[in-house]
Length: 103
Image 1 (cartoon, rainbow, N blue to C red):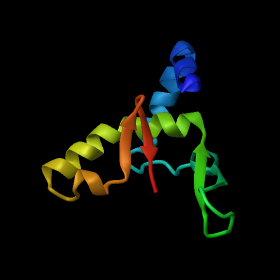
Image 2: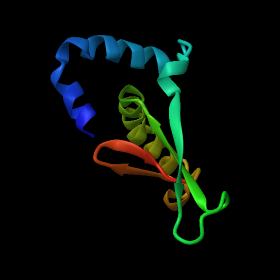
Image 3: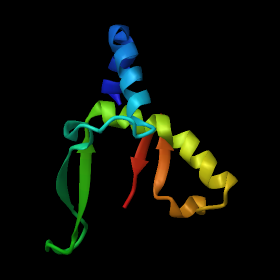
């Protein structure tokens, strides 16, 4: 969260990031690998340690999280208006202005 707050203060990159988002969103531009690349770690669940008793968590870069937070409301609105999926089944929650994906 702190890194997104930092982004708000470096206004000289806002225009470039905005142009990139506008090109990526409709699919007009290929998404670079670094943009969606994440680091996945296994977090042990309570109980006996085993390979089945762990949950993966993936950390993405700040620009990717900012991009997905911009998509949350329009996607949510589309799903609601068209009755495509119940809110409880989406696996996505808005929290601190970011898109948080639960598995």
